[in-house]
Amino acid sequence: MTLSFTLGIEQLQGELTKMQPAGCYWITADRQSDARILARQVIDAQKSLTLISTAEAPRMLLTPAPAGDTASVAMYSLPADRKALRNLPEDLSRVLSVRPQLILLYTAYAEWQNLNSAELSIWLKNITRLAVAKQVALLIISSGAGINNLRGQLQPFFRRLNGVAHLEWQQDCRDYRIHWWSNGRQILADRVIRLGIHQERLTFLNDAEPGTPLTLNDEHHFIAVRDVLEGAPPLSRQWQLFDNNAAVYSRARQASSATIIFSLSNNQQIAMLAESIHDLRRTRGSALKIVVRELETSMRYSDERLLLACGVNSIVPFSSNLSYFLTALEGLQGQSYNRHVPADLPQLVAAMQPLDEKGFFPPERFCATVKRLMQNAQLPENGKGLLVALRPVAELRPDQALVLCKMRRYGDLVTLVDDRLYLFLFSCRFNDFDTALKYIFPLPYHEIFANHLILYEDLQIVSELRQIRAQIPSAWRKPAADTETAEVAPPQQQRPVLRRVPEAITLGASPHHQARSR
Image (cartoon, rainbow, N blue to C red; front, side, top):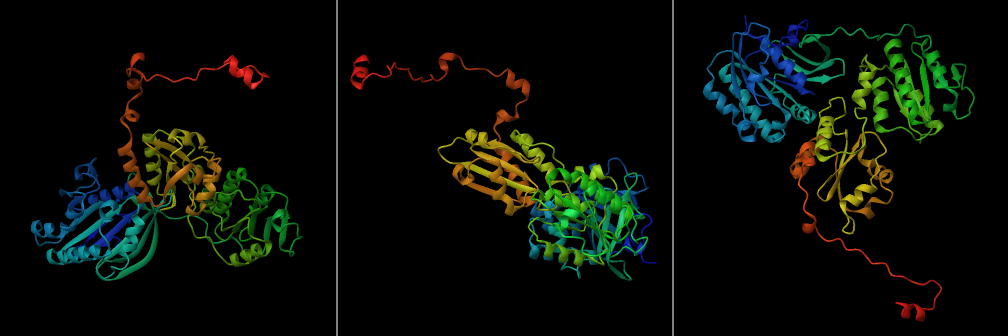
């Protein structure tokens, strides 16, 4: 019988979890916490293995101790630098004996971004040769911001990697996406399995969401707010028009596969719309077609993402005319909604719109808040917002420019470091930068600032935050107690303040008389 190793995910078919010696498998994860759970579960399922970790100390990964009966774990800590990673195949060839065994390489994405595609190809070539020579199975688990870049790099290496999968966070569950997986006898590809967390373990989740509609009798019916037709009468007998969104929602709760059309006139309706759409999608199934038509320009990028996550099929923007709107409705017919909608709406809203603060933050708090957003896997990669560095013109002091900055939107933050203002515009697209700054500053920003720098990629923003932290003056980092006891220079050592002396002028007098009076 051929020796094999397992991921340890219960209730999952063996052909999707088994790893054969002389093979290399790679699993990526959106969140470091999920990658850690998977790594501990793999360790728990083995009698013995070799653990190599760069993301954290191996001893910390095994704390608390796994619940299984793992006999022995050989632990190695790999420095998080380019040279150590490139030399890993050669180092392993010296210490490994020729026998079937499992090696778990637990890493963060930060280590892999230092290798380009050519270097990664060479590394995989060397590590797969090692696996064949030493008869080992190598499992690599990686996570962190920018992990989707690594996923894209791995796709061409089908011949070198025996398995590639991704653990995608879906708020209340995880989607285990298998790109391909070989267990020695067969190769399985393009599988998606829903997993849950129970007692700090990944378990198979039987998805009980309604998928098949109860009936298709109302498939060609349209339930809509009257205003979306711009005053036109019902287009056919299948159209039912109502005066407001509440009436549409009440009628839609009896539908199974109809097209439901809500209207949006102002931003205050977003919360109620999200609640209605979420309830319809969770209770009425995936055959329902849910559309939101914007009647006024009121929707932000974060609002669009929230409605899409709640189950809407299509959002028709304000700039679209009636003809385009009807064409969009026609294109939805026959479609089914296949995305997962989490059951907990408040948790979903908190994840999609995580900031309820705005305005000025001290630099240390500013960096910590933005970094926490960069680690939110529910927000889109390279779409969480813009980090903008602004240098005022020579005639304007940085603190004067800060006074002109009026943050109106929740999630928009500003801080001041040396001679620069740093703005973080939450959930703002790159092409909306000019519009955003028009609302923030009362004057055109190019008249206030000499130059600016815009960053929108997650890794660029995280790198810039590290540089901001290095520039933070020590006074910002002093605790409040220290600042209260700070010494004040005596009056004689302070710079004198120059004041203009007022001069008396007699109003109505002739210039000659004024000159004499002076």
